Length: 83
Image 1 (cartoon, rainbow, N blue to C red):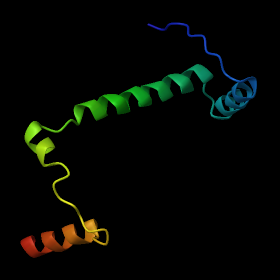
Image 2: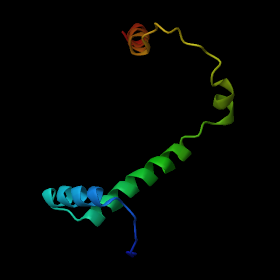
Image 3: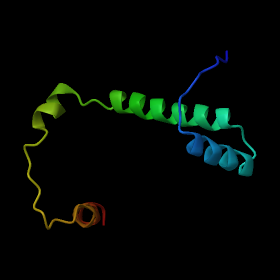
């Protein structure tokens, strides 16, 4: 169900947004709705990514050296394990 929403936005931004929407063959309402969906989905996924208490207690216990290349280290260890 759609509901009307009133927003207060600077006139110049509205005009630029309307031009952008027209160029993309979309309505401004559609663009804003999709943007809000993305924002709220990111927040929900961040809430779901909470660590379990055992992992949370270990967080910060390892200090990685500043010059360590994590991706290279992971690649080297996986190659050693599986090759």
